[in-house]
Length: 315
Image 1: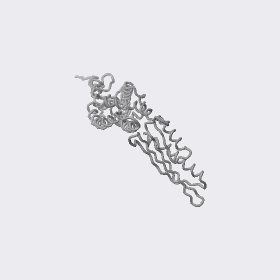
Image 2 (image 1 turned 90 degrees about the vertical axis):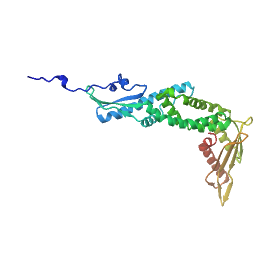
Image 3 (image 1 turned 180 degrees about the horizontal axis):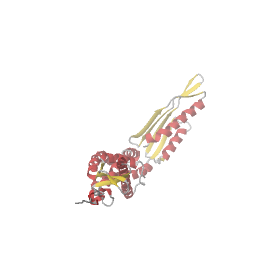
Image 4 (image 1 turned 30 degrees about the vertical axis):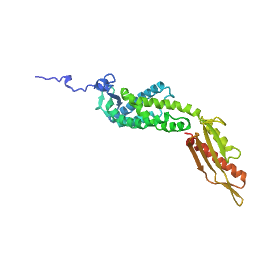
């Protein structure tokens, strides 16, 4: 008997459900997984492409959550994409990206692979990190909320300089499991409110500047300008803070050479206690006459104030 082989006897590989954007949810439900596919002509390139697509999708969704939360909180415009993708890529690596097997699509001549992250596994990584930040920030923010004046401004700036890690984790957590973030939402709201409050706290600080050893008032003018540029108020009366400034520009004369070791010290008080201080000694300046060496010393002090004073004393 003549046997004719049937075409149906030739093995065929069916396209898996995960390889199609319309059916991937049947394998990886979106409530449980985050997925992205990668296509490449070379098999070894499909997984890196999938990982990149997953990071980009993740970044886009987290940024959308960020903008939504910041609008609700009436805060500044969202931080547009600033190193967001770098942060996201480092985070999702910690979540443990997994991959399906490769599938070769004979029509497109591409290898396809699906990269996926389990939301539960991602949450298990996120939650301990969130709790560490939550514990320390909650205590500190409660303390700052009851303060006023320059002390409040300084402590608020210090606290907010340490919230970026928590904020990135929080926005990521909102994307992973929004219904599990209620505990952290109150702290996030406090952070947003504190960012708004700093500007009003700053405007309420009224500083009277008293200088000694300043001669023609050149250092007073410089400090006054820097304080005003930082949005604080400089006043002659009605102050709630006193800034005491001591300028040291005593000359030493050796032969025909006049030299000075410029120094400056600043203490800001709220009437009850010293809130901040700044003190610095500079290298020697020298000239062949008193006028020149005095100008050089004052210029050095002005340069120092320009570079360090605001950050050291007002923030």
